Amino acid sequence: MRTWLLTGAVVAMLAGGATAAWASVTEFPICQAAGPQFGPAICGDLVVWSDLRDYDAGQVIRGYNLKTKSEFAICPAKAAFACGAKLALTPTAVIWQDKRNGNWDIYGYNLTTKQEFPICTAPGDQVAPVAYGDYVVWADARNATTSGWDIYGLNLKTKQALAICTQPKEQTQAAIQGDRVVWVDGRNNGYDLYGYDLAAQTEFLVPTAACAKETPSIYGDVVVWSYESAGSSGWDVHGYNLKTNQAFPISTKGCAQHHPVIWKNIVVYLDNGAYDYGAGTQDVWGYDLLTQQDFLICHTMHFKYDPGIWGNVVVWQGYGAGQDNPDISGARLAGGATPQIVSPLIKRPVQLMYPPH
Image 1 (cartoon, one colour):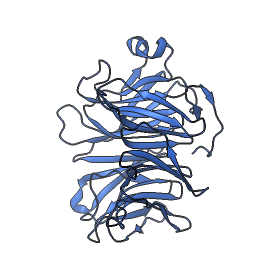
Image 2: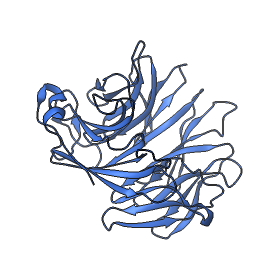
Image 3: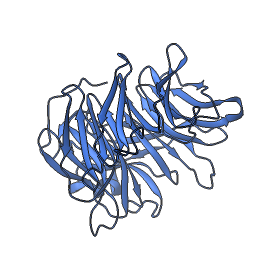
């Protein structure tokens, strides 16, 4: 277990040399078993991931309870499970993409009843599920010959199927929080960001510059994404506040910052060669929208992928030095202000649209 103290040189890098938003970041291992572990997801005290240590026995999803510090196994049909694909997680279910029927479908596992169940087995492929609360959302190719990839969903509680976006061209890379879904949309022959309010049943555009955009994430009013502008030295991370109609940069350090995820006022992202730390490697960094400060989360491993955040816990998949198989690691953020929804650039809290979880 390692603890980064954000003092000295690191603090000097932060805007104006101000006090760091988080006084310490403590890394800890979640799974270092033999064989590769991929694609972690976190919800509350639970972390789940794809695990190949017992592939022959069919145990290709495993989980860890952060509170009890105990690991558990889930066993979907091993030949059909998309090993390496990122999972989705709610307080009661694990969700994944599954090829047991000859094309990619969406299946789930009820953590209470310990029963597996189908979520979507429509024609064509259904991939990349994301989940929050009672909702599961995914990219869907059932209409591939007419409208391309679309965004569909399901309310796990009511069993209501949802056609969220069936516009022409491709809609992919969905993210969800509360009643809002966002995705990357190609209807205008570019890479736009659109969203849908499940409660109001209305679609909305996330205003962005005309450039390539990927991997959006949303919490409350704030949407974040990876952004490649014309003439840029690499991918940056930008954001937009849907309530104040403000666009703002999060990380524009050059090289590449990508795959952001957001929890309240904390944005976590991957950084290829940030500052003087591990040039050419991929580190995990954070950004506090409340203080407008960067902070280092993990430099100790080499390449990291699939970051996630819930509360003050960050998780990712990473490779150690000389390591062929990735493990699952985490970090606890400590010493900062209580996470809260903020209005970026104004530095003041705004009203929570959804109750915190």
